[in-house]
Length: 172
Length: 445
Image 1: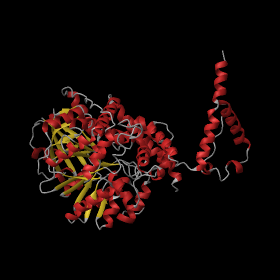
Image 2: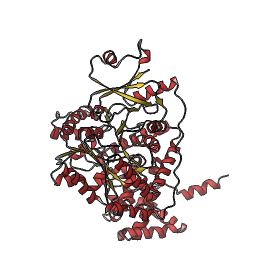
Image 3: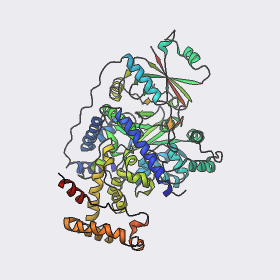
Image 4: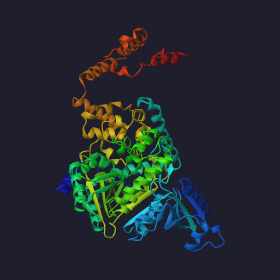
C-alpha cells in the first residue's frame, strides 16, 4: 500500500536527521486603540476595498435592512458578518454557518461585511489565536478586499472572478 | 516582435514585482525574525514528517475528509480519475496547483474524456495557448497584453484589437463563470495542511478556488507531503510571509480553510510523494522541501528575469525549480544549474530562507561527479582550473586575453566553435587588472 510505503520511505530518510525543535511563535499582544481603527480602514483601502464607520451616523446601530437602504440605495449588495478584522492587512474572518451556501462569498458582485468596530487584532498571529478560540466548523475564510488579478501584463484589475467591490461596515 | 526583443520588458516586469515585495517586507519590523521562524518550523516539521502526516490524516478523516496516498504522479492521476469516474464527472474546474502540473493531470484526464478548465486567469490563458505556465504565481507573465487580446479574440470572441486588461479580464470572468456553473467537480492545490486540525488552506487572489469548490459538491485537493505544518498558530507566520513575498500584498485576498465536506458533498485530499521523500535528509538540498511556492526567487533571479520560465528544463522554473528539477533528473537540468550566476539573491529573498544558490552550486559538483558534463566543457573547466590555480599562470592568461580580444580578427574570435559568442559580445577588458590597481594604490603614501 502506498501509504505505508511513503511513510516508511520518510522514516528511513529522516532517521539520519537531527530533530529540530519547534520554535515558539511571537506572543499575541495589546488591546485595540482608536488609532488602530484608522490603521485598519487604511489597510482595507490599500487592498482595494472600502470602509464605512457607522459611528459617524446618528443611529449607529441601525438594522441591516436600513443599512442596506441608506448605504447602498442602488446596489444589489450581499451582507456578510465578520468575527474580527486584521489591522495589518484589512482581512476579515467571515462568520460561516455550517451548511450555509458558500457561493455567497464569491458569486455576488458586491459584498458588505459587517464588523464590530472594536473586534480588531493587530496581525495574523493574534488572528489565528482568535480563530483557535472560535474554532472552525467546516469552512473558514479570511477575505481581504475584492477579487483581483494582475495576470495580464501586471495590470491590476479589480473584480477578477469573485466580488467586484467589498465594503467593510464598522458597527458598534 | 521576437521573444528575444521582449527580454528587457520581461526583466522589468519581474523586477517590478521584486520591488513590491521589498516594500511589503519593509512594513513588517520583525520580517527577518519571521523568515527565521518559518525556516525552523519547516525544518522541524520535515524532521518529524511521518508523525505530522499521520496526525493530519487522522484528524482529516475525523472531519470527514477522505485521504488518499500516491507514491508517484501516475498513482495520483489514477486516484483522481477514479474519484471523478465514480461521480460520472464530465467537466472539472481546477484552481492553481503546481503539483497537478508536475503530475501531468490535465492531459491524463483529457485523454480519458474529462474536460479540465484551469480557472486562474493566467493559467486559463496559457491553457488556451496550449503551453505550460512560465511562472508559478504569474503563469502568463511572458505574454504581452496584445498576445492575450489576439488569443481571446480567436477563442472567446473579444473585440479585435482591444488589449485593455480590464476589458479582457471581464470577458474572462464571464467565460469562466459559465464553466463554474456547468462543472461537476473542483480540483485545488493545497498551500498549507494543518496537522492538529486536519484542515487545509488554499490561497488565491481571484477567488477561483472558492468559486469552484462552492459551485460543486465534489472537491479534490492535491498536496505534496511537504505541505503539512503542525498547528494553526504557524499559519500566522506563513500567511504573513506568503503574499508579501509573492506579489507584495499584505495577504492574499482569499485565505480559505477547508475542514469538512459540505453537507451532502465529498472532500478528498491526495497526499503525493513523487520523489519528495528522496530529498528528505539530504544535506545539500533538503531545504528545497521548505518552499511555500511564492515565486520570489524567480522575480529576483537575473537569469530567470532575462530568460523566462519556458527556458527551464523543469515545470517549476527559476532557482527553486532548478534545484527540484535536478533532484528529479540531474542530467536534464544541466543547463538550469549552470545558468545560475550564484549571486545569492534568491536565498536572500526566500521567505523560508532556503539556501537556494548553495544548492545549485552543490548540484554542479554532483553533476560533474556523475560524469554528465560534456567532454568539451570538462576539458575547458580542467584547463581553466589549471590556469587559475597559479597566480603566475592566471596573470599570463589575463594579459594574453586582453591583447587577444583587441588584436585578433572577429572571424577568429567569433569562430563557430565559440558557441558562447553566437548571441553575445565579449566584454571589453579593463586597461588595468585588479591586482595591478591594488598594487598601485597600496604603494601610494
